[in-house]
Image 1: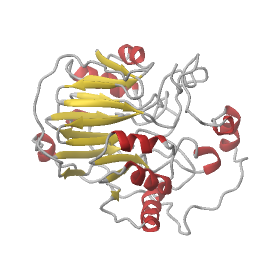
Image 2 (image 1 turned 90 degrees about the vertical axis):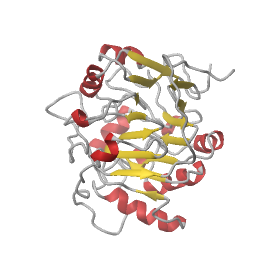
Image 3 (image 1 turned 90 degrees about the horizontal axis):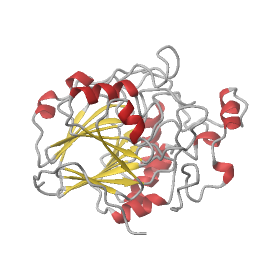
Image 4 (image 1 turned 45 degrees about the vertical axis):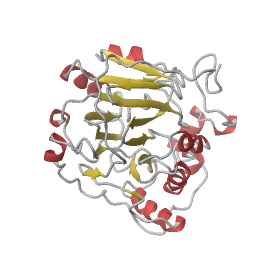
Length: 346
């Protein structure tokens, strides 16, 4: 059995019992009974995040296959276009990150690119099953748009995806590799947890994804607390052209630290990964924690300054923004049938 497997599901390797989230701790946080914490910044940032911008529909419709085109749709949802392949990450287009249409975290910003305006989606990668990362209505809509779309998920989620309407689903463990046309998709560790209800805690796996072509590699980290495993990810997949890293939902630290990095830790991940460039995500869309909605990129700027790195190394996009990035080399084109899962020995 691998270190992150248990008899009933999964766990974070090396995490002490005190660091594991419990329902009692959640109740203490929601009732405001936890330890008091000083604000992360000596400024008031309780304003709305920067206003969304219009996506570059021309670049999205005709991306340069030799470059990387990135559009931030919001939260952890990106459209990544590389090597002639359109990849969508953790698609959530619904109004709420919740099992209910009437309660739960509500969007503060509309999706930067409407689902109906997406180009044909070749691959969808899912990091875990929390409602702000896995949305049934969005999966159903994507599956109904095209039978061509392939869905890549961590262990335990394939059956749920098929019930939601997905037809081409590949399920991966950490360090497994799948293929979709010119893309190799590597399932990599994250330090988080899973669950959509009261009785399914950690029954399915959580992960990040490295997207690899002959032109380079991109890490989509999903949702994570700090872990030394990121040094190993950086070592195995060096050089990383781009890392998409979470920076929000970090307060209070006594409760959030095991599963959500703050901007200081995100900068540390950027450095330990050895990424050429990082882009922030997991902020500005749903208010999931105590910090002001607009604080994370301001805190990120402070963290960059403390680390002595420039904005070009780790930046935050605006919702709807499209960026075209230089790639590391030419991307070759190839065709493929159903993706095959390759697992490491041992």
